[in-house]
Image 1: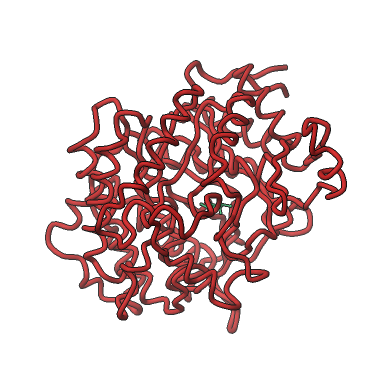
Image 2: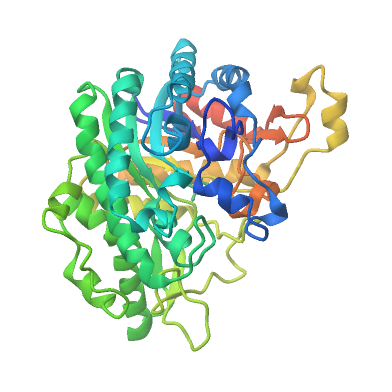
Length: 466
Ligand code: FCB
């Protein structure tokens, strides 16, 4: 049986600047907080950095050729703020020229660009002298100016501009758990940072609207956590509701409904007094967007923490306790639960009524390529097969889950696989491979995995064989 996708469904692949570009000191690029963090011993597995990454900065033309060959019609890239403005404030023309060529290169190959402005590479210059980046609210104004500059130059050729990618990670992993740059570990800092990120989003949307043609959309991408209480006990239900406020509604409500929920302010009052919200901020944050980008990998089972248990970043009132052995996991240990995607899309549709696109979905798998096979096949890449069966199944099942949401009346009209190629997976470095195209990092050769061919066929048919 085949299940069809709606006509005009947006099919794409995704990646982010620091994860693939390399060229860290070239073309006038300044350092970002991720350069500093990855170069700090002990922060990234194997001491890996994004200095070279996939060398996409130099290989972008052949990378785009490969995407076009595979029939990928949309590419969600991110634009590195420190490449466009080395100090976060002053235009570096050479950096913006790079993205200008990249965008033209995509269009020449029939690939539509969806550009994210902030995929975590904050210019290091905006995190200095104890200001710690997003703790300083003026960063929101600098971000809006960056958005305006990019929108003015590239906006006529982008399908849409996304302000932020997963601000939850920036706030809670960057300032609460310390797993991400800048690596601070104080739960109370997550809240002013979250507010300044919300403000940056709202101000950037306003700046973008002033320069973009009406045909270019504006969006934000959130990793809304699909939460499930571990039991029906009052404690677990309360922990789940608390986390929904802290991890989800902290973004959704101000961006889409016009203000923070009163319960959020109450449930976090032991950590912060929210005095960083100034008059007019909530109105600034509440800007119409054309669609909400949703990144989904897996759901979480939430319980009230027992004494000494590790709690969810940013809070001491909820813990993620994982699933039992009956649920298959990926090598990240992430449970594979496709119905979680359906439930999440239905919830967002019902509660917020905004058009949706899935802007990330995928898995990390083992290194499946024998280095000898790569060496032998140098002259003929197509002879190298990478059998990533778990990923093919994951993509098929999650595309089915997306169709289930459409059947339930959800307005979701796009899907971007994460990631177009193996890359620098943040704190995991190159140890975790999320690509549908394999990258052999020593030689930088690319080999599409089975999942890339599977995905290519789905796109061609605009349908899923089940
Ligand atoms: C998301 C990030 C993306 C990638 C995937 C695996 O949280 O947006 O850059 O790391 O996870």
